[in-house]
Length: 102
Image (cartoon, rainbow, N blue to C red; front, side, top):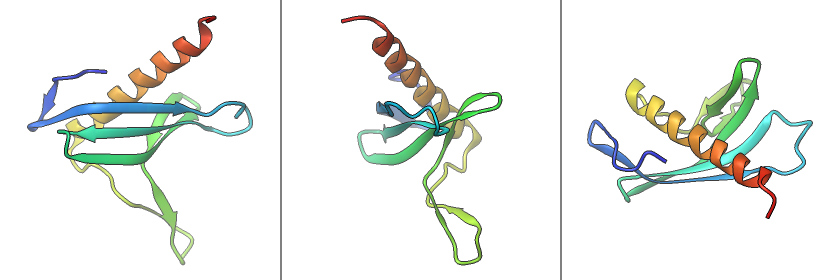
């Protein structure tokens, strides 16, 4: 996790990944929680396996018109990138840990 790195005075002070076990049929591979500045917790971020590799998706709900609406999403491109990099880095670490025999 890239602790101490700042983007617009926002620092990721926590990043946890819960890898989903036995999910071969699902494109959702993990759930992520990110803490910003020890002040705000972003839960429900998903790591999804796409055609070009894993990507993150923010929580959303299905509206009455059939469209999905995100509950929150960083509006700053650099912050989105910062969160994505931290989440995918922690996901890779969790996969490595799972692959190493205890």
